[in-house]
Length: 253
Image (cartoon, rainbow, N blue to C red; front, side):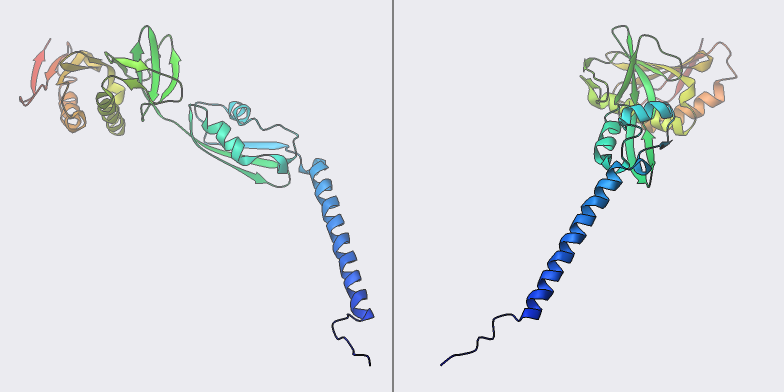
């Protein structure tokens, strides 16, 4: 006696499955061919690179730093690697890269803001508002104040400047950042540090004497106000003494 087995697929079911698998393989093959076509088509090669946010650096410098190759297939460009290349440059704080198919790449950067030079062994180290080393020069261009008297440990482009009294450098940088907001930093030519005091050398031959332990940022408003009041009254300049808790004392030259 024979028993029917309902699990055996019918001829039509087998045929349908075969058709499905053939269709699936054809789609896979077409997909691969399409990918190869796109990856090798000149339509998708990098033809234009647009740069936004550059100030110190030129557009061509930014493109060189990115290491994007003109003519390379745009889908092969590793955006993460490009952004890393850009951020490795001391001048670039933030970078964002995106594709604009079929052949354009957009690079948006935010550059670091230089704040001062630090004098050390005949060299001038340009730092930003975080105390990060941007570049080292043999001469300075008077565009930023010069800080002298810091005891440096080491310095390297792209890294935070290391010195014996890091908190003092932080306070000076914060002071200069706030002075920039008041449009006052342009009047500061030099900041000189000795064992006990900090001397600010301003325009109009005016100097400011501060204690090394002072909270510089808190005294900025007073320095600014006094300077604006006396800068044109005393053409020979003078000294604004703000050491310790003593009241402000001005001694003309």
